[in-house]
Length: 159
Image (cartoon, helix red, strand yellow):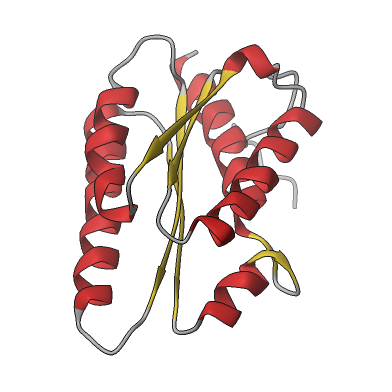
């Protein structure tokens, strides 16, 4: 049976959106792989390098406050937040990961702009490496795809 309703679904081109990629320096050996994946994905979908800005912050905990500032700018359409929080022997992991996720979610809701959550939360460094471009793909690339699709969906809802 054919549905007779209007459906809105994101697409991936042509892309005129402007993206801010926030990069946590803590665990940089892993996060740089996420950044490479995100930039490569945006480029492959037609985003000009002029429409990508990379902002570096100390760690994942600092991502939300910078995301808030960046999302408030008129020249940014979407934010991609990248980081890696690896579980250790203390509860530090739970606080950092939880506050980062909650803060980024709040920024997205308050700003009405997509804020992609590309912060790895893993038990081991090996798991993080796998998600930054090896066996488990590249989560930076995945988050960039999500940001592209969300910009498209939100633009259609504005029409």
